Length: 105
Length: 404
Image 1 (tube, chains in turn yellow, cyan):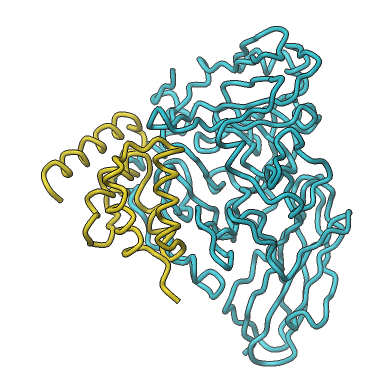
Image 2 (spheres, rainbow over the protein chains, first blue to last red):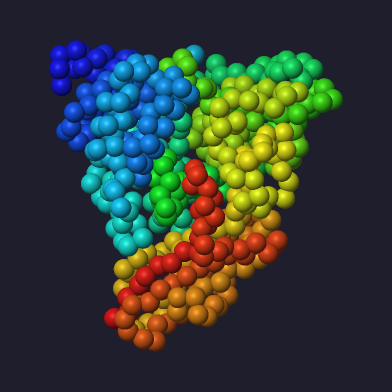
């Protein structure tokens, strides 16, 4: 994790702590979630966990192919309003597909 | 404004003492064949709840372990939790207000808990609250979304006031079409669509549709919608909006994302006696009524039983409110079926406990099946009705057991 990503992760954490003081312990547990190491992981940690915990990704492992993950990421941007830049999408989709994609037949 | 302190007070000292290390997850895991695909999720504590099966931390999605379904009514602190949005305030019951508004309302009004409790007849109804996506994790081919096992449901006695009484008090115009419900939970990013659900006016006026303040004789737990939630008996839990703050009676179909795009099934794929016509499109329609279903609650895959020793198998059966006509059990993988005994009837929207006794006559591996039929004659099948979002899983359940 580079410095700016680490800072962004902390900013997210602090924001969440303010919003849900009640769930601080649950957030501590959430922060123990570990995604697979691969290029693009930083992008996921920066963007996806703003709105949801990363177990959403692990839970759907093996279900979506590259096109399916792309559709899912685009839904997050177009419908849910995730502030992801167009240039970041390919890196995110590649990471999700390579680490959590549907196995090829 | 939501107040943290008042809510904690409501939970009592025992819960306060839990804060900190005690909230770390216990490592118990689900076991057994048909649960294998779903076994990775550990049991964990959500504040104020017993250990539940964690699907996701945030928004929190936690399901009830099946053994709790051996009781007719699911304990409040073991009742499943499902949220779509992660900004979940702790609502203070004293300052909470419910606003009834919209272009079809005659007198826009605001109610406090006290004015609702004093001003309207209080009613109680037993009803199954089941997520439309319950058992999605058992879909084959797999469907993306929360990978629920069997426990995204519960049965409770809900009490509160009739939605119809409140709507008639404020008055609505001719042409009122839908009633939309919003809760205090909100998105973290302003662009995310707020979780708002609508009902057709006829369902909103059903005398069994209520604004509930209590479940099983206690105030609603925070995670189940304190201080008020909508209860729509017979319909999937997506309509049972929690932390209810706004009711909007409209002249037009509500077109937000959670109605127009999410929670939809292919048209004609499932039975429902009356269509949600104002929301039905060319290809799909909202998921509404629960389909007939059953669950074995005291046996699971790989259980061992003794030869010639009597076993009492227990389960539950439910549907969209027509009532369970019969439950049949097969102990030979579907070659022959025997009718189970239906136990206490708690009303047509409650699930119905049932039991079946037998003594195995042969050693080895066996397959136990259970299927329910409702009073309309609808029953469970052996083939999944596929739909993209993985709703309404009601395949005949198969449990493999060994006799030694």
